Length: 175
Image 1 (cartoon, rainbow, N blue to C red):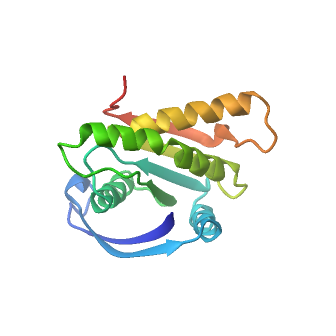
Image 2 (cartoon, rainbow, N blue to C red):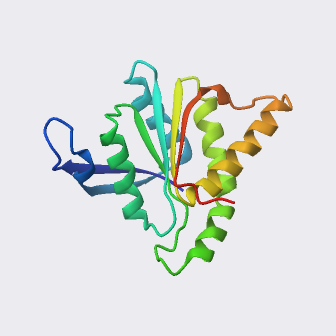
Image 3 (cartoon, rainbow, N blue to C red):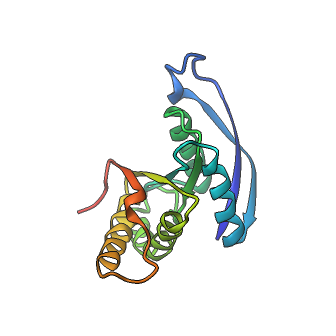
């Protein structure tokens, strides 16, 4: 499913030197259809010179709310002004659910691949940066690898993966 998150941030140092301690709260979560979601991402990306999108994929033991707050902190921490997108896969949000989370991350590959293809195929998106944490790497690496393979095959309408300009695999929880 697709949606829009509105957050409020406070705290940290005014000079930006302590952005890790920024407090983030979720103000509103609104469900959207796919077309409406992508149109909003394109509008937000268009506000930056490079038409930039930041895609954040959370890790193991994260609830949706924790993942949303982490995505907001990453965007604030790097001073990002484009379209920030959270890809949230169904983590159990429990330290004792490692194997269940690993299985859920594996089954989230197809939807993530679709999102990556949509973002990179859009003529209104210029650059995509991806930040992935922990077990989210399981989904991202598989999705990206599958897309690369499909695009190398010369498939018509293939995503423009050259738009993916930066990938950060933070604490990658993969074999």
